[in-house]
Image (cartoon, rainbow, N blue to C red; front, side):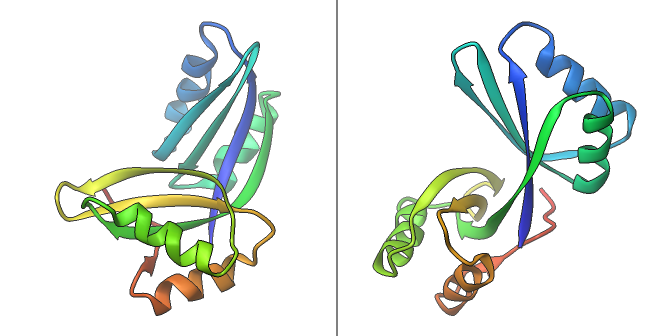
Length: 141
């Protein structure tokens, strides 16, 4: 099971720079990141090489942070790869609430990060593994 850090921030210049600067100073490497705009505020979601340390440091710096359990799965870097995962989950009535991903090796493999609604993460990982997908908690790009 993967962990994702969500940071609720005011949507104004310098906020992203402050967060990335804090992580750089602490020698924490970001492995995946996305930013969602919500008007005056935004949510930064990230996975690092040390989520526990990142969470604690950001909290100490008065950022509003939380952890979410996520599924991190390796998929082929090919047309329809995400669709196949989405279909497997839909067939089992599992809703994908949030998703993002990135290429790990062009033309070979990608990482897909999924937040699933009301689902047991280990069960989702088991379902995907039975369908030949590898769950990854720590990944190298």
